[in-house]
Image 1 (cartoon, rainbow, N blue to C red):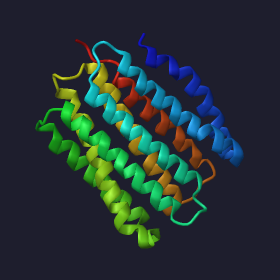
Image 2 (cartoon, rainbow, N blue to C red):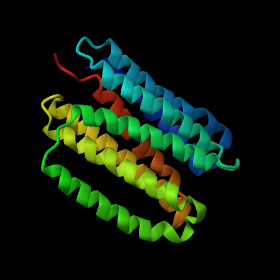
Image 3 (cartoon, helix red, strand yellow):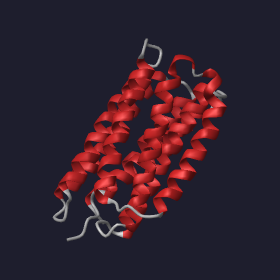
Length: 222
């Protein structure tokens, strides 16, 4: 078992406490456990640098994405502050660009890309119709963000046919990117469509997805 995997039990405990704090609206605990969870995922990515068969470009790209995500997490915790949500959105946009870039470097272009792009665009159009009435001045930033996260998932699927990664790695990348996408959709639905009490459960797919992407950096083979 790779060293990065041992972060998982600690992350699971911290994530459970974070979701509980979110549902119960215990803000101080959120301020503690949310950055802690992201730092644990960053630690998992950093541990990939100790692997003898590491891919330095991929590991550094993932670490950059996670550090940007940490900034986004902190901004979203301060959502009552002016422009905090827009700042968080911008930082997560950059994180997705970092991920999409390294996924593209590892992946392979195939005919399946057109299918994944078509499905993602169709999903994005349907979702946009649900939330557009409440977007206001955020309309253009949200459209750009949706396009970028769709590109991230599409480029993640490109790793499935790539000789540069193992099948296990590719599955981690694809599932991780999809879960990140799902968590973003849950967050947007709560903010721009229908608020619901348990929206903080979006943190589960978010952190599991981020952890899988970080973990994939430890599974290169020489």
